[in-house]
Amino acid sequence: MPPDVSLPDAIRVSSDAVRSLDVSPLAPWLSAGLAERLAAGPVLELTIDWPRSAEDPRELSECPEPRLWSLHLDALHPWLPLVLERGSGQLARHVAMLLPHSFSRSEGLRFAPESLELWITHRLFLLDHLATREGLVVRQNLAQMAGVLGFALEESFWDLAARPGS
Image 1 (tube, helix red, strand yellow):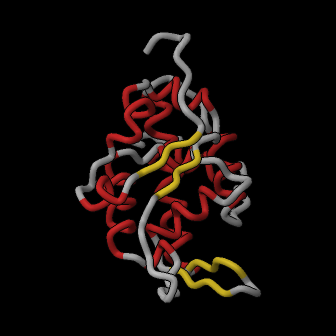
Image 2 (tube, rainbow, N blue to C red):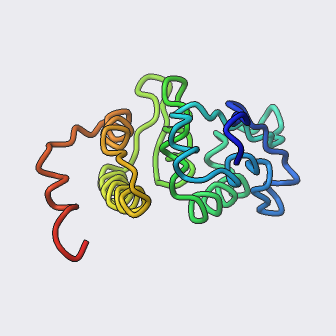
Image 3 (tube, rainbow, N blue to C red):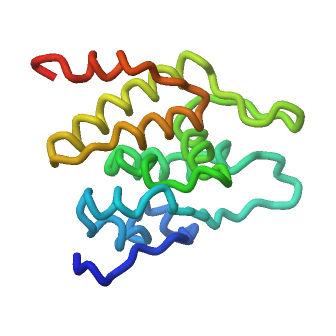
């Protein structure tokens, strides 16, 4: 990818793309190398256009089609949580598409604790491995991602990830 091409901060995903599991709306991000994606930082905002009637009380993450699209995207591109914008809740919304959760107006989004712990630990190991294989250092970004989801990492966590055979 040429250095003068910037990655878009916002991407709109149509209901047609959702129905067909088409991840091509993210083409600029998908065609960039991992280093370019990570250098952009956590800036990506995804908007999924999914029609619901006014009487439908479900959150987007409770609709099976957008959830399946998100699972598909996440399976193909596990680095996505590192580039999703965090301040407006993009990361939390993405994780809600992947994990069991509940939502209340008073408490907000609440993940099933065991599911979130397994997901975040798996993702930390996976993304650290992918980045290390490419000669990239992303542990601070990973720690910030975990922090947004309510996890504080001790430095000793990375000792486990760096063991021989990892």
